[in-house]
Image 1 (spheres, rainbow, N blue to C red):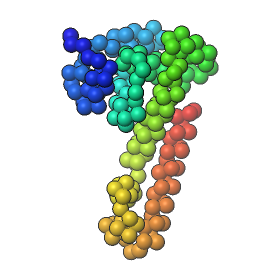
Image 2: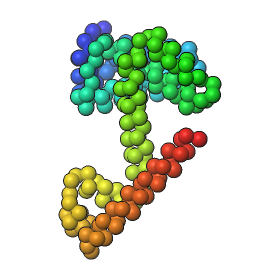
Image 3: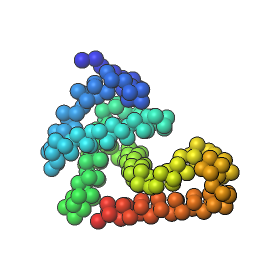
Image 4: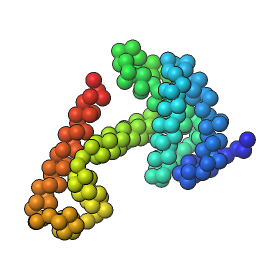
Length: 193
């Protein structure tokens, strides 16, 4: 099996290099799976944690904000462990005390990454929540948001969507935004229950 440096692994993940990604799976999945199984999870949980963590690494590396001062496995393992412990807390908040997590983090020396990991996980959850609810909007609202994301002005959007006036476009934009935010809030509240 080929060996890759931390920099090459990160670049390979961003470039979707099959050889590098296969290397990451082959080299690291067994240890992540072992950890998840040892701490109350199953094979599916291990797979989900591994995949989610790989996506977090991808997003951070792609953004250019990721500079590691350790090996890839140290960083990746900390994300996986943190992700799994967070899932356990979310599933049964009273059964998995915060001190267990803190001791685990301190024991393995991962506390220097926790803020970055927290932020990346929260960002991923926000994006997922937004995407899920965006797809539930009407086609008209989806199209309006897509045009806004492309940077079109209100006047250009009015013309593109054949609206009667820019006032109507503003109103429609506000209504679509309220609808999206309401859906996100409702779904977010359900997740917290």
